[in-house]
Length: 142
Image (tube, rainbow, N blue to C red; front, top):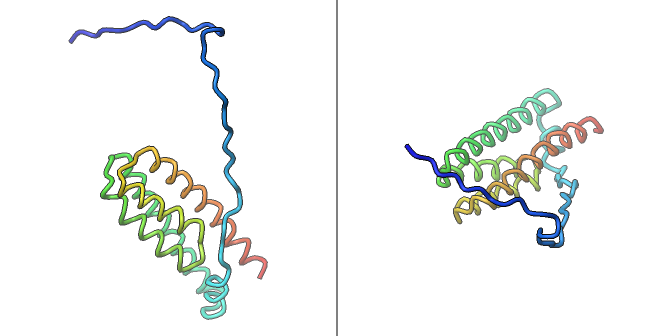
């Protein structure tokens, strides 16, 4: 097998095009509706409520893993189901940002937009990480 390599000239500082650079900052505000968590703790008791919330969070983590595997395999069709599952489960415990990000992941998969999918999946993962912390902080305050 023959390999052809092309050499590119090194650009000097004066030859580099200049363009404005936009710095994007991710807002750290992650929205959590406390009512579902309050209701779970009020109706089930502390021990059972903690177990239930742990199961829900583990379920979301499992679905996130499924999303990553499907994305790595470029299987847009395999992304929609776990994304919708995250939406449904996230709504049960008031994870508003997680639910919205999962909806956007599903939409990107439907549109077969790999770049947008990568961005929205990163957003979903950040939202989930923050939500886990917020849920336990919320519980500790009550």
